[in-house]
Length: 391
Ligand code: ATP
Ligand code: MG
Image 1: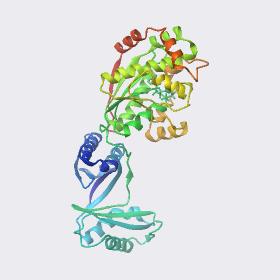
Image 2 (image 1 turned 45 degrees about the vertical axis):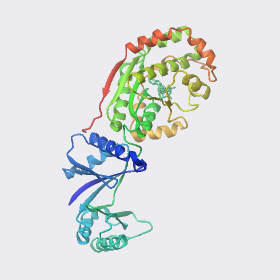
Image 3 (image 1 turned 135 degrees about the vertical axis):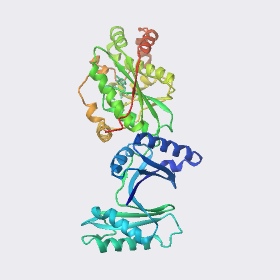
Image 4 (image 1 turned 180 degrees about the vertical axis):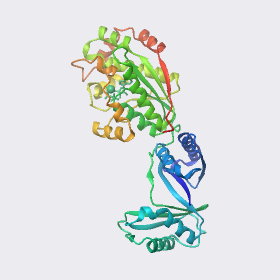
């Protein structure tokens, strides 16, 4: 029995004249994710066909495809000749283990209208054959445990009863490139994932306060970048030495504005790095009201530091919702490792929650901002993180 994986995509189909470009990007991303596995790939009728050379690797193919943005369903199926007896036999062979003791129904889709039977006739014929050969099986068209699907396509008949939900979204690379401010916390990796899902290529910047934050804290950030890279492909991480800036803020600025001025400088440096690396937007994990520096007034002050669009996909989400996504995408366990972040090192006791921009700007003027930013930029270390394909 010959097995193949049908990869079905959604939103791309709505792309009109650009559809071809989106499809090419999706195929490139699939090839990247499949790495050195051996397979044939082709695109027909809004479906990518992936045919593993070694059938026993189907699960590994499925696992990798389940991380690729733009895919809605991953459908491992049996493929055979468009001939009703062969279809019945193949359906039995392929689905009998899944159907034992179950209530089921058959659904058919006839994309190839030259096939001599209509959908209902195909379903009835295949359903009858399966019932006859699997004694423990029963029919339930309203509440089936399993649905066996038969798709009659141009190039063959495809049979399946299990399909795996894909990530959805748009292919990586279809939405340009953005710079993620990646801390070691729960929020920013989720923010990066959500924007990457809309087709952005990610770069990341981390502000690092050696020796107040340890080498382990840096490794944690790199590990988070690695998990993100499993979805997006290569992620470049820029590590910015931030200690001098934090000490200057601590020594020269009023305590209530420490965090805000620090946030402004982070944004400014992130924007410079973004410009140098062809990124068109910034991404942060800010969520309205989560902490003092994320009130509406505080976000106004932070936003004023940059001119690029800042994507904040978590702005309207609760911590519980964010945490659920972190668990699903696999960043949560790493995010909760207890290493300190640069923000936690110099935290004011009474941060301003309704800061006035003019006052923050006046406080910031006490610092040689340009000089400090310049020096931080000179100390940037850039690390390329590749996804781990082979497990
Ligand atoms: P997270 O859980 O992502 O750390 P947070 O709730 O702790 O977020 P803040 O510390 O106020 O929030 O940071 C807000 C956002 O600023 C983060 O989501 C992240 O995008 C960015 N950020 C904070 N600290 C750093 C850092 N050390 N390096 C890079 N970006 C940072
Ligand atoms: Mg944080």
